[in-house]
Length: 322
Image (cartoon, rainbow, N blue to C red; front, side, top):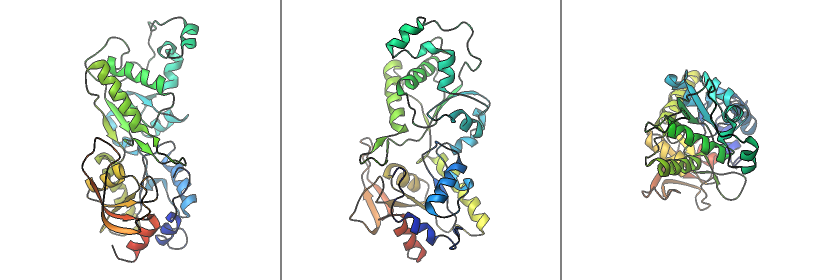
């Protein structure tokens, strides 16, 4: 939860190692986080889990964007947070990323929710000479933005004008949203809103203002593009270790992304009961059916297994019982 390692996790990964910190089973870490590079995340996990993990074993929420080659030479607006957002975009292969600070510098009048700022700027006229990165040709919401007011305003400007910031258009700019999660589990005792919540708010405003549904390409768990990328990464790791993949387990604590994503990809789903999902009554159980946290999802969701924590399930499979 947040920066705290869920109990049982470290002991579980020790069972997957050779006693010297080297994993002997193919493992890939799939996360809907993206605030750092794969290498930095691997370093963090190596320290926490006491095993050696490389960046090649990490699939961040935006890692599959490396395969979106047709986007890489376009002017793409990256919404999100982090001082290295543009650098992360370039590392993913995007040659001309644009971030909010670029727009604030070049078109400051777009952001006038703060009335004091509007009075100080005095002019609402778009410059005759537009910045070289306009028109924007695509949008990536890379993670949960800060300054929601400014991000929402500029994103609506782009979406309603097809990236030109000029006249309204019936053509919608292509939009990728990384991370469908509505909520996530931090150190706080209640769930916190995530990138998916931001996207749903943006979609509601877009529909109200345009009369059209916002068309979104989703990336991250539980999407097919992300699980396909993760499975390819896992096959590469298995080949490196010289082992086969008789069965793949998808272990996580979020019913709506971890269990749904694994089930949709024909991966054996394992629901951990000590993270976002909480159930102190389960030690280890087969075929556990739970309800989604989303009101729009009415069908029950069944995990192949549910376990008290990751360590408990790893112990179960290493004993050959699964």
